[in-house]
Image 1 (tube, helix red, strand yellow):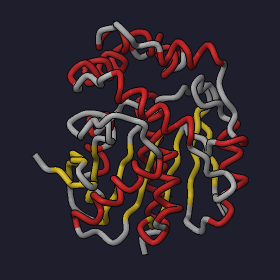
Image 2: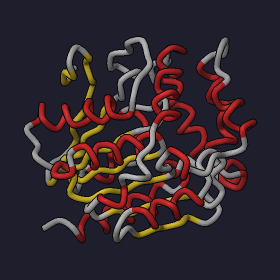
Image 3: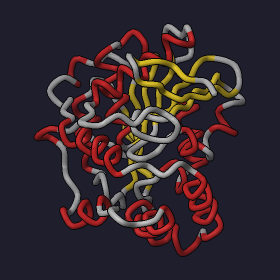
Length: 268
């Protein structure tokens, strides 16, 4: 299996297709499997790179705490390992925070940036209802299936859950087949989110950026996308009306097409 090294940490990655490099960065507890709705599309246009964040999947799961800077350096290490000087980058949720940190840490490595269902941390972020976070993070003693089922209402809109049971079932199947994340690694990633703060640094970013959100996101309220749009010079915002948090599943085709169109604008 392909791994890159970040110090002593092994980061599992996969590469699909050919063309300009595209790095996809998953969220809390997610990994390369999270992009099952994106890879079949993007591999036809890009050299598409997915990976398991530190603490998830087949990557190393050292004791915490983790920081977003460490996670960003892991991502940069994959580009180094593959000999890629710069790439298009799309990150969702925690992956969007990691993508911000990567862009701030090494702006020359990011050609254009798509940030989905995410926030800039610190005092500027708009937090969800505390009860939502408490229930979302309460995984102790639960099986993989119980965690997935518990979290469905936090990830998807009611309309999507009711009208697309086949796509919900496909998501559930992929998640069930993914490696179970140990509790210590989940908490370490959660701490990286809680300590992340980029708001005061974003006005210095000079990378083309598209910010995407769902208007019914229960985990990262849509107002966070408006804050990112305001803080990042020249950023654009795209809202998916009625959509929940897991845009890569609920809005798969619209997200794929919007990201591809945006990256195509900055392909030269």
